[in-house]
Amino acid sequence: MSMVDIFFIIGCARSGTTALVKMLNTSQNATVFVEQKPNLCIEARNLCRGILRDPKQVIQIAKSESIQKVLSKGLKYGDKNPNYLLFVPYIAELWDCRFLFPVRDGREVVRSLMDWHHFYRQKFSHSGVFAMNEDDPNSPIDSPEQDWWDYSRLRPGPGNPYFEEWQQLSRFEKCAWYWANFNKKALELFSQLDNQHWLQVDMKSLDGFKMRQIFDFLGLDGFNANRIGEMINARINSLQERAGLPDKFPSWTDWTHEQRNAFDRIAGEMMECLIY
Image 1 (cartoon, rainbow, N blue to C red):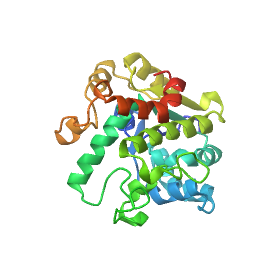
Image 2: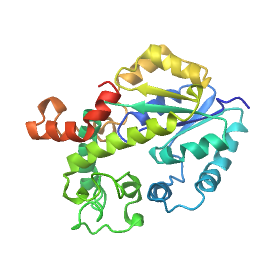
Image 3: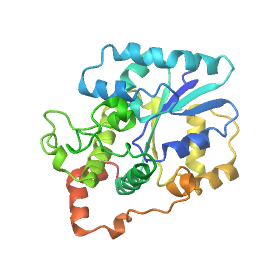
Image 4: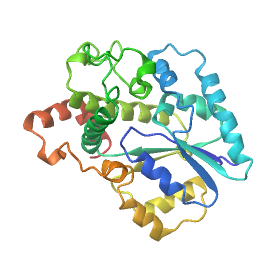
């Protein structure tokens, strides 16, 4: 088995990960999933909290059968899920695999997360982004099972500068914190791997040439430049593409002075790190 028979796409929510998966699925020799079940929402957050027993066994049980099923067909296996973030060391230990780490301008991610919250609050009254009791004491959502995807998102733990004031932060500030700290943790974990086993992908500057490099990195066949070019320009998984809705939260160029200052205070260091 070559090291590129298995790969995982792990990036912050609303960073273009679903679009990347759909482009990779145009290959002739891979099946790439979008958050293949089990999604490990509760397990991922419990791992973050330090209360998950035997994380290596958890991810092994969750993925082994699915991986083997695809490999047995002579195809490469890929899956994207932000919940795999803290499992990276265990995944790397269990499988000879590669990782893609998509990144996107934090200002665009925050805008998208704010719109995503509004959309899901309208579609599902119980759902949202940072809408649990631990985020807002007035929220009736107080157990992971009530909204496991929201529970899965990183939040500051004891010792983090924002732990004590988390409930007082605005949702905008929480989204900025989430983007910055997801990417901080990802860089920390991926940097511990051999450089040949992971690739950072800037979704803002993604073009056909860079997608061809990604295909080569993963050993994928059947690259179609025209089809990939169309997909790059299609705003895949945006609210416009998914629900026919325009962006509602303003672009960062139209943010207030207070919003810009809040974002820079919380996420400015990561913006510089990722050269945005």
